[in-house]
Length: 338
Figure (cartoon, helix red, strand yellow):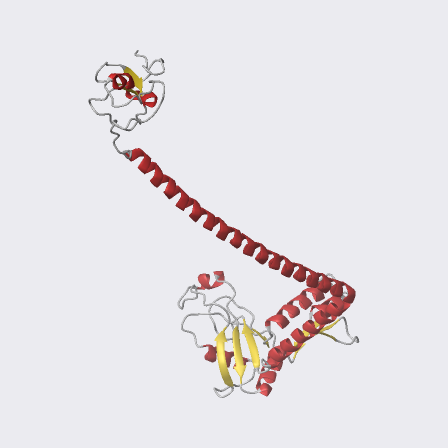
């Protein structure tokens, strides 16, 4: 490993040294004032060799001094490609950092707006909770009595609507127990039943006739007598008459002759009783069914309907009581109802 002729220290790397073209001595570039990036000329001389050369004056200086020699030709500094890439990366990083600062600023603004909106929602929720609390306090202050009055009003309105619906059925009757068959003529059946009861009806007296409920596909004409016996109860027939007097006559005649059966009409199958009753609304039909069940259980002698109204009587000599709602059933039969 060569030593520097100027400072006397070993030269670690060959690139950091420069060699004299005359004495072949090695020097640090820094010791002889040659930049690390400069390319020395092939005939470069060390300071010692330069001092031995004849000069016009005595301005030579020792080798120890570090000074630039005017005879040394120094090439211009070259740009390293790596440093250019680093500068571009630093510039790109600064631009990204600036964009990130803008985004952070916008995010802070959005966060501030969100906090303001959330505060507004909290304020509105607090207002709603306050109003709900106020309403609850008013509700507790009023007590249940006022709402009981409303429930009673609703119940009365339901009763009134039911009575109006029943008034629309004052010209209707329900005939049940008449066997059902395919391709039957309900109008003809109604005329035959009324004739057996002693009331002759013509086409002008009958407004509309239909079977109630869904059609049962197993009712087919021509079935055997054994098949008829196994069938479920036939659907009832609803009849709307043109006059109320005709309906009243038909119902009175049916109550007088209660033993009318399908045999009297010469209908196939085993004998079945035929009933003629008033057509009741669904609510009244349910009340009448419950009243009959409770009347049988509590030994009430009479439970009947008249003009679409339901009446019960415990025994002879006692006034009849009308049933308009379940409240009346509880008053008459007690809290235990069917």
